[in-house]
Each structure stands twice: as C-alpha cells, then as structure tokens.
Image 1: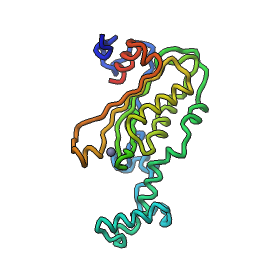
Image 2: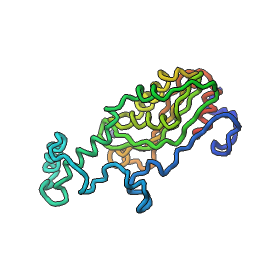
Image 3: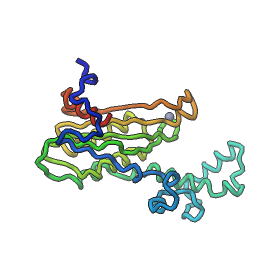
Image 4: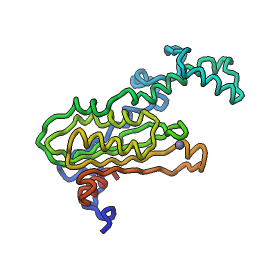
Length: 241
Ligand SMILES: [Zn+2]
C-alpha cells in the first residue's frame, strides 16, 4: 500500500487536530522582509541591512573589491552616484545571508534540550526559509515543516526555526538543507523519529534557465519511525499539508 495515499484522518491540518499533536504555525509577520511589512511597523526597525545609506558599511570588505570589478565587467560605472556604495552593501548583505557558517546548530540545540515525559508528535509548520543556491548564488525561498516524536527529551519550540535559519543562511542545495535540519534534530534529541519537508521556489529557475514561475521543489527527509512506520509518516504529512 502506498503510504502517501493512506490518510489516518481526513481533516484539513488546520482544523483543530484531534488531540495530542502539537502544531505551531509561525506567525507570518515575524520574519517578513521590511519591504512587505506595513509602513512604520516596529518590525521594520529591526530588519536586517536594508541598503540604507546611513547603515555602517565597510568599503574595504574584501568582497567589495571583486564586486566593483563585476560592475565594470557588466558595463556599469562603479563610480556613479547610485553604485558608489553598492560593493560595500553587497558585501554586507552577502555576509548577512551566509551568517549560518558562523553558527553551530548542534550547539544551539544542545543548550535548549530538556527532559519531558511526552511521546506525542511535535510539529512546527510553515517556517519561512530564505537560502541561496550554491550553483548560481541566487536565492531560493519557501517553507520548512519539521516534526519529531520525542523519547523523553524535547527542545524549545522557538529553536526549531533557528536551526532552519542556521542551515539556510549558507550556500545550499535544497536536498542537503532538508537533510541537515533532520539529522541535527535526530542527533541531539535522539527521538523516535524526525520528519522534515521543505518546499521552495528557486529564483535560478524562475529568472533564468527554464524560467518556470510556478514550480516548487519539494524535498523531504524522514528518519527513525518517520521512515520505517507508514502511519507515523502519514500522520506527519497530514499535518503539514
Ligand atoms: Zn541554482
């Protein structure tokens, strides 16, 4: 029997799930880029480097120099007003978008694990995700859904989106990103199982190459019971659908 076809429940995931599974939908507004936040929203103030001219920039960042060369190669004049600070801005935003290299997700998890006598599935769905494809260095973005079945140890729910970010903010391929998130949780929590589903749209497919605007890539990594037990897997997939 194909487990993907068999649903243990016919309900839509959002309609008050029958009992014990904990589902957390991350608030959509929490990580929206400033550009889409309502004007004057407090979130905008805390938003990452927006490219505003008053932000501190390092003109001598080693990334800035080759960016100037790229601009020239493209036929641009790096000295013109609008581009004058662009190399330093590109350097700063590249460093922001790849800050995951400086983070140790496993250490981050280790500090937030606590003993808890529960064995019901925990699911955090719709975690916004922004990453960069390592083949073209252009963004891919979408959502991650993460579930696990605890075995005496749980982790603070807010840590799960942070794990996603720590792996997403690097040069990535979606398949590896998905598997790294799953294995980090599996190694640290030693749970009965972990499931991760990532759905993302790749600008390298949308703006160039095949120019497909509406295709999404979906990847998954199932470990432990999520892999070996069709009912566990289908319960998780029902929640993230
Ligand atoms: Zn690509």
